[in-house]
Image (cartoon, rainbow over all chains, first blue to last red):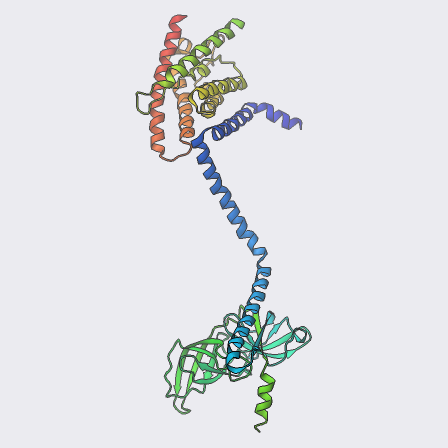
Amino acid sequence: MRNLFRFIVKYHATFLFVILQIFCFSLIVINNHYQRTVFDSAAEVFVGRIQHSWMGVTSYFGLARQNQLLMHENTRLRNELQERRAYSRSFRLGENRPDFVYRDAMVINRSIWSNNNFITINKGIKHGLQPNMGAISSQGLVGIVYNCSENYATIIPVINTEFKLSVKINKNNYFGSLSWSGKDYRFARMSEIPLHIEIAIGDTIVTSGFSAIFPAEVPVGIIDSYQKINSTGYYEINVKLFTDFATIRHLYIIENRNRTEILDLESNND
Amino acid sequence: MINSNFTYIIRFVVLMAFQVLLFSNIQGIPYTHFFVYIIFILILPFETPAYVLMLVALITGIIVDAFGNTLGIHASATILVAYLRPAVLRLYAPRDGYEANTLPGIRSYGLFWFLKYCITLVIAHQLLLHILDAFGFYMFHITLLRVAFSVLGSVAVIILIEYLSMKRK
C-alpha cells in the first residue's frame, strides 16, 4: 500500500496528465458535434466487431441443440409432406394415410473400414423401430435397420458386403442391384444393367421403390465410372455415394406402413 | 512573491484578451492560426510544479475553447504542453543547469535557446490541436500543412511578444 502511494506521488504529474486528458477528451466528444459523430461511428464499428466475434464464439455452444431442433423440424416436415402426398392421392384412390413415416435418430457408433460395417443409432423398439425399415440421411441412402433392442438399433449400411437393394438410373428408370465391393466406403457397385442401355458418367442413381422398404427416388449416388463386361452382357458400374459415411451424424428412419401387406400378398404367390 | 503572482495574473488576463479577441479571429492567411496564448505556460518560473502548470493549462485552454466554441480541444493541447514542459526544459538545460532567480526567456538564455524551447512545445501543441480538430488521421497531409503554417505564425508572434515584454521592463 505504501509502495503504491509512493508510486502515485512519484508519477503524480503523469497521473494528473492522463486524468485531465480523459476529461478533455470527454469534453470534446460531448460538446463538439463533428467530433461526437466521428466518435459515435467509430465506437459503433468497434462494438459491432466485438459483438460479432462474440456471437461467433457463443453460437458454437448451442450447436448440438440447434441440430436437434432442426432434425425434429425436418422429421415433422417430411411426415407432413407424406401426408400431403397421401391427401392429394386420396382424391384418386380413396385413401389418405401416408405410406411412409419418418423418425429421426442419431448415430452413436459406426464403422467404415471393415467388410461388414454397421451403424448403431439411439432409437429402438420403444420408439417404434423394427427390422427392415429404411435409413436415409439428408444426403441420401444410408441402409436398412437390421436389429432392434429396446432403446437402440443397428443398421446395415450400403457399405456392408451383405447389403443388397434394388436401385434405378434416374433418367431412364432402368433398374439394377446395388451392393458393395468392400473396398472404399465412398463407392458402391451397381450391376444388372444390360449393355444396350445408354449410361453416362454423372448419371444419378436413386432407389427403385421395389423393395417395400424405401419410397421411390431416394438419392443414392452418381455414376463415377463403368466397365462393359462382354462375357456377362452387363455393365459393372461404380457409384459414388451421396452419403458420407465418415461424417454421418443424423439419420431418418423410414417405415413403410404397407410392408406387411405387400409381403403377405407376395408370399401367397408361391 | 505576491507581487510576482499579481504580475502573472495581469499578464494572463491581457494575453487571454488578446488571444480570444484578436489572434483567434485572424483568418486571412490560409492554414494559419495564431495560438500564441501558450506563451503564458512557457514563461512561468522554472520551479513551478507540474500540477500547477497543468491546472493553469486547463484553465487557459478552457477559456480559449469557450470563446472559440471548441470545448476541450485547446484544453487538451495546452495540458500536453504543460506536461512536456519540464522534460523539454531538462533537454535544453545549459551545462551548469538553470541559474537561480532567472526566468525562462530571451533575456536570461538568449534568442536561440528560447527558439528551440518555444518551437518544440508549439509543435507539440499545434500537432495535438489539429489532430483533435480533424479528429482522426483522415487527410493527414492537410492537417500537417495546417500544423506547419500555424507553428510558423504562432512562433513569430510569440517571439515578438517576448521582445516587447523585455523592452517594457
